[in-house]
Image (tube, helix red, strand yellow):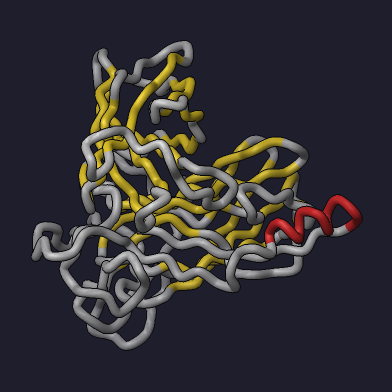
Length: 321
């Protein structure tokens, strides 16, 4: 499930330098859940929670998931659900734990049976690692370092005991873009939390982010995130991974993975617009990373994509968490 895009122009000398860097990205990148082909109906629609908000549209709730955009072969497994694909396997070497950060190590085993050591740089990094709890109340996006033997490592600590899913998002030097996933366990007493309520507003510190737009399965859906601080719009967002915002969406229930970047805009805020396509009805958690005043911040939203017998999206009922 991947989508990237976004070219930017910043203000001032430093801004122009960053803008040149951002200019390497395409105009708008529509993200779809990607995955291997030929798996049939292994993954079906996810039933939304009772009383959740609704975005309605036409169709049967399924879309193509070739990993190359709309129009691929239907029935493929969405990205992140497989530990192995196209001859590549995600191989965790260490475990995760709560408390102080500890080194988490892993390799990607290639088609020849040895660790991959050559990767393409995508969005400023050779490896993007996302770690989320199975109940979707915890989320981290980090960038490990690779040793010459192909071993990746990063300091990592999770906030509580329980089951987690790690996603390795990368492009091997001699292959196509992949998102592989593996389950990890943090030892201790585990009490799962309910999925956060559907909400149009999320906050972190002095910052508030408002979400506009609905996710309609099988269609390109525009999502607009508006960032404010202390009630005032933030119009000087700083680039992060080649864009002014970075969005990851995970489907509740199986944690199918969607990676998106914003559409092209000249302004550095307060709005960051994404175009994404969900493969099915169901609940999704959206995690937005944005950078301001030299610090990276993350907020999370719960949204629901469902279909009804109407021909247009119905009103969404917001429930602030």
